[in-house]
Figure 1 (tube, rainbow, N blue to C red):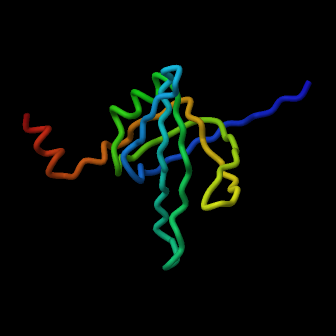
Figure 2 (cartoon, one colour; figure 1 turned 30 degrees about the vertical axis):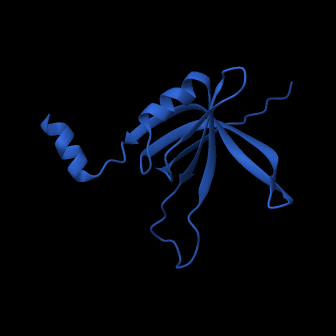
Figure 3 (cartoon, one colour; figure 1 turned 90 degrees about the horizontal axis):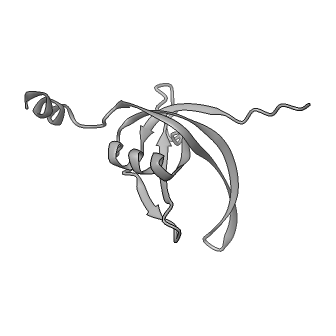
Length: 118
């Protein structure tokens, strides 16, 4: 019996506010790009990034909790699909989320101080 493992775990920061959409059947779909910071990055080298996708209740929870700059731990499965981009087919690998953990909210220091003062 063959056993295949398709599981990935990543940490990084949300590159933008999450985009939540609903399919015609009412299923929530969320998309986000996760960026990783490398302190030893060479000048001019792009930051590594990953495309995240969440479905259903997880997508709606993610949308409420996460905003640009939020530090995240995510766990999910890798899936690859073809997209039309500027008239050509592009292969994109995405992480379809099973779980996520909000490590920091991405709020500025002054916003955090205001919240803690309430």
